[in-house]
Image (cartoon, rainbow, N blue to C red; front, side, top):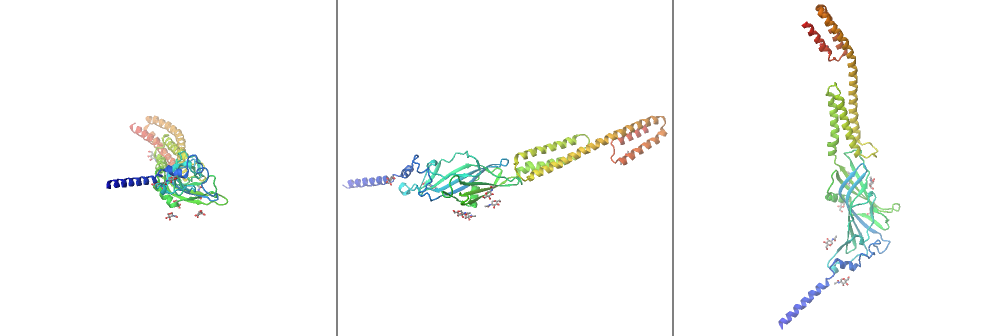
Length: 399
Ligand SMILES: *[C@@H]1O[C@H](CO)[C@@H](O)[C@H](O)[C@H]1NC(C)=O
Ligand SMILES: *[C@@H]1O[C@H](CO)[C@@H](O)[C@H](O)[C@H]1NC(C)=O
Ligand SMILES: *[C@@H]1O[C@H](CO)[C@@H](O)[C@H](O)[C@H]1NC(C)=O
Ligand SMILES: *[C@@H]1O[C@H](CO)[C@@H](O)[C@H](O)[C@H]1NC(C)=O
Ligand SMILES: *[C@@H]1O[C@H](CO)[C@@H](O)[C@H](O)[C@H]1NC(C)=O
Ligand SMILES: *[C@@H]1O[C@H](CO)[C@@H](O)[C@H](O)[C@H]1NC(C)=O
Ligand SMILES: *[C@@H]1O[C@H](CO)[C@@H](O)[C@H](O)[C@H]1NC(C)=O
């Protein structure tokens, strides 16, 4: 009897627990969707703005974080960042009680199932090539969250006046494509300091550019401009060390080289060709610079002035060398004439001397004095003149 009762109790307990399990059958995400009558073909959720009264606007909270600065092309005024965006808004048709569904409080589903705000970026000049995020998350109170990663190819006006010590500011202005403030109110979820801090934590690659801060500016729509705009201004600083080492210092070195070429002897064309080579090397560096800097800059960048200044100095020294060489050549030509005259005098003298040494001695003295006078008046000593005089004297002594 006792065992029978125990058995009955056991079965009763079993039945109870089975019933308990039965009461928690709505435990899958699909149950939530069934409850909401949400299917892929149900367009109630994806076609129109999810409000029960069209006069109510949808508040969209936007969060943008900078993940990487991929490229900055000064020449094309292009700025390519990689950003994370999160949009949050309320869908009035979605709600369920998590207690009825095993505590499920959020469900992810394909992004095309639900309505999304059509946010766009004013500065974007190329369609985003990265695949759009496939899933969208909604919670039991109807708040929907949509994450998206974007590789943005955007325009940005760069000021390269202080290149390579410049700081650039690039704007990303988010706004709705079609909806006005009657339909969509945009809000930024974080302020500038939060956005900067989080971006700094997130930042992975920033090879040439050093991220400084991210400023959030909300421009509320008015009657004139009937859309809310949120402007994210990314401030970044160029790492200039490489440009100093690769550009500024070499240019200075070329100038030093050019100056040091003054120590090369004036004879021959070596000095001239050396200077021309150095000048050409500088021209190559200038070509590289030309490739980096945009042609549209109003003010001539300081670095270009620096380059042109050094180029002008080197040009001046080249012209000076050419001028000196010209003078020397002219000088040598007039000297050749004189040495010819001197040579004939010398030969006459030697002939004469062989005949009569004593009378010749006076002649030689006269001639040497003439040379000396030439020395003093000419200033520069003609190199061949002096040894020739010595030779003559030695020959005379031998004779
Ligand atoms: C499970 O969901 C269906 C449909 O919404 C509902 O009829 C049923 O009562 C739910 N079951 C429980 C135990 O909540
Ligand atoms: C979504 O639900 C899962 C499991 O219930 C939970 O771990 C997660 O934190 C929830 N996410 C959000 C955004 O509520
Ligand atoms: C960026 O946005 C700010 C705020 O609207 C504006 O003052 C600034 O002129 C913009 N800069 C550029 C380069 O458009
Ligand atoms: C930004 O928000 C944080 C937290 O909400 C707050 O502590 C901080 O003071 C805010 N900063 C500014 C500049 O408003
Ligand atoms: C961001 O940095 C720039 C340049 O250093 C500065 O002028 C600006 O005030 C900063 N903005 C914020 C919000 O800190
Ligand atoms: C824009 O509107 C929001 C609320 O809608 C308000 O908090 C903010 O101060 C407004 N900003 C400006 C510049 O009017
Ligand atoms: C002029 O020539 C003589 C020839 O021997 C030389 O000794 C002298 O130093 C020269 N004078 C000058 C000013 O170069």
